[in-house]
Every structure is written in structure tokens, then in C-alpha cells.
Amino acid sequence: MVADCSGALLEWQAELAALKVKIGEVFQRSEGREIAGAFLDGLLSGAERKTGWLMA
Image (cartoon, rainbow, N blue to C red; front, side):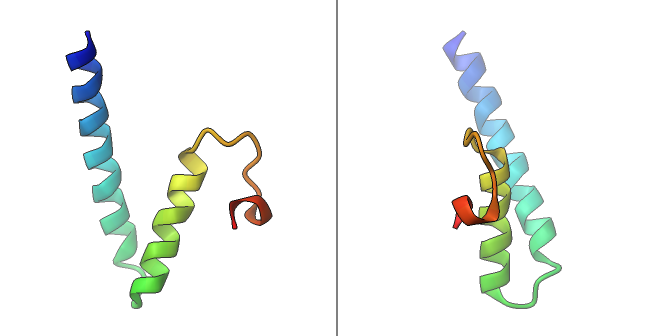
């Protein structure tokens, strides 16, 4: 059971990393890519309130 969950988690993480690369192509500067990736991480986090002020 744990192996199934960890395998699914690794697959999910790989898909998220691929999505970040694809979205990152829109940004010319590395800072923009990093911020966009952090934004996605924040949206997917378990934080109850996801405002820009709290995420900063």
C-alpha cells in the first residue's frame, strides 16, 4: 500500500515538474520561472487561505 502511494506521489511530482517546465517557457527570465513555480506550489499547498499577501 505504501509503495503504491509513494509511486503515485513520485509520478505526480514528475508531472508537476513537467508542467512547471512547460509554463516556464513563457518567461524569458529565470526569476519569472521561479516565481511562477512557487505560485503553483502555493496554490496546491494545504494552506487554508491563499492570498498573495499570505503567500509572500
